Length: 114
Length: 113
Image (cartoon, rainbow over all chains, first blue to last red):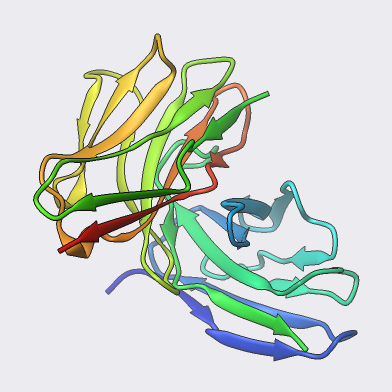
């Protein structure tokens, strides 16, 4: 079945460590997104990519990095510069660029900093 | 600046009763409006969207939403709630003038048996 796969589902990190969250899609979608979800705050956009080898910062990109070397993959690295990384991270994709179509979400990755 | 608001953090209804989850928006152009649902520890699932056309939009699982331009609202509705509808609901808006989509803070719906 087509969809978005995020891994790992749960991740624990010590302070000062970088971690990378994986996001893979087999929907043949051009656009991919990373959102962060905190209780009571909705979703906030970290980075998005509308085409391979191109990506743009969202509202809260500081302390994060991404790459888009393949259409299917959009990994997110949470660096040690991110001051409060404990959160639920959601990857999404859409067929349409420019935020005009519905988003298809993965199951999320919950990161906890110890 | 564009924004979206969900004025109620929580909504509770009895099973079989109609439900409404409210959403208002503020954009500078004609909005694209979306509703998503999230079950615990899961990703969001798309329910419905409004871009243009009929103000009443029908979506998945019996949900519908009414676009009201004068009140800048896009409330989610269902005629008869099910216990399984209990979840977190998010409204989202996209202003065509901006390459961005904004999500509301979410409304937790509880349907009691």
